Length: 88
Image (cartoon, rainbow, N blue to C red):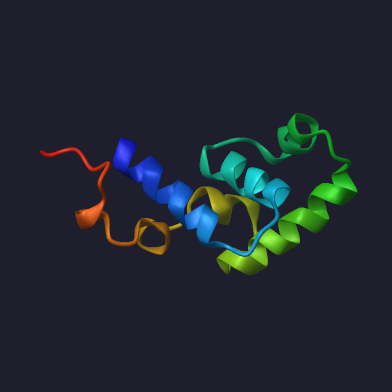
C-alpha cells in the first residue's frame, strides 16, 4: 500500500542515521536479506555490522528480523492525515 510505504520512508528519514545506514534499514524494511545487504551496498561485512548497530540503536531493535518485523505502530505515525493515503 502506498500510504504504508510513505509512512516507512518518513519514519526512516526521521531517524538520526547516515544515508548508508538508512539504506541498510530500507533493505530490511522491504524484506531484503542481511547476507545480501553488504553486497548490495558494496561494504564489507564488518562495516555492515557497524552500520547495523546504529540502525538497531535508532530503532530500538537488536536483530535483523526485528527490523523486518518492526511494528506498524512504530513507523506508521498519523496515517489518517497522510496526503498519500488513498480513500477507501
